[in-house]
Length: 178
View (cartoon, rainbow, N blue to C red):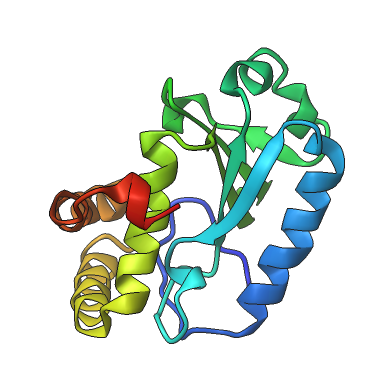
C-alpha cells in the first residue's frame, strides 16, 4: 500500500513493494528528465528495510543544474506532479504526486553533489548501517505520529533535531556518502 491523505500522519509496517514503487517512478521521472538527471535515490523511511513509515515514497533526484528545473517546473507539473513552493528552498524543489486524498510520492530535486544531496543520502545510509540508531529514530517517529496525527508539518519538524544531530556527527559526508 502506498498513499496517504494530505496532513495525515499514519505509520505502517515496512512493505517490500515500496522498492518496486520507487523503481517504477524513478524510471518514469528519468524518461522525461533524462538530460538533466545525474542520479535518483530512494530516501526516507520507506528506503530502510524493516522501518515503519508513512506510506509515501520519498525520492531524491540529483540534477546537473537546479536552475534548469527552477526555470521550467512544467517538466514535472505536466506529468502529474504538483510543485510545492512552501516546501521548497533555494537548494531544493519539492513536488508531490497524487491528490490531497492520496499522495503517493514526494520528489525532492536538488543539485547533485550539493550539501542537500549528501545530507539525505548520509542520513539514510547511517540508519541502515546503525540499527540501534534506526530503532531510536523509529521510536521518535511513533511518538510524534501519535502526537501529531493530523499535522504533518509538526511531525516533520519534530524529527529535525534528531536528524541534525546524526548529520552533525558524520564527518566528511561528501566522502562517505558519495
